[in-house]
Length: 173
View 1 (cartoon, rainbow, N blue to C red):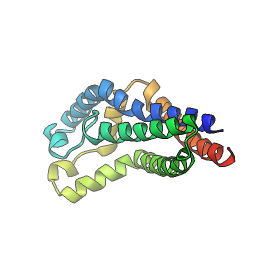
View 2: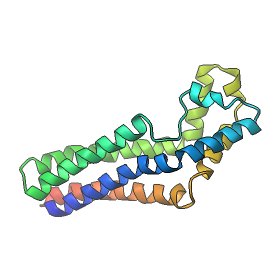
View 3: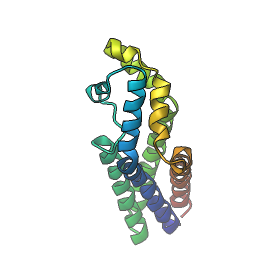
């Protein structure tokens, strides 16, 4: 069963690495679409940069998924090697990945509300004029149809199911 857990952990790692890869490839187009939507709304495109709203793979958008993938590869390696640390680290890391992915899913489902709330907190009149759902919709529309929502749903399925089954596998194995 540790081998099953390892294979699933490797799949989870690939799922997390897909995030920055897709954002790196299509993020510039999403940014351009968001800027065009802001221009349509008569809002300066500079508000994106000024308020840290990014669609690319910079900063934590790459560091966090790559770090999670590295941890999952390490746990998978221990499980494949039959090392005693494989089981407890799988319990810790796969549990954290399950919880973390729930937070990611929640943030994706409430993105418009969260962005609107952040804009309200800033108090900038230009930000308050933005039609946030239209802005986010324009950015999402720049990604290919296979990304939104297909790849997103596949990634969530792999992470949730893979982590849960890996936990079960090390428990039973």
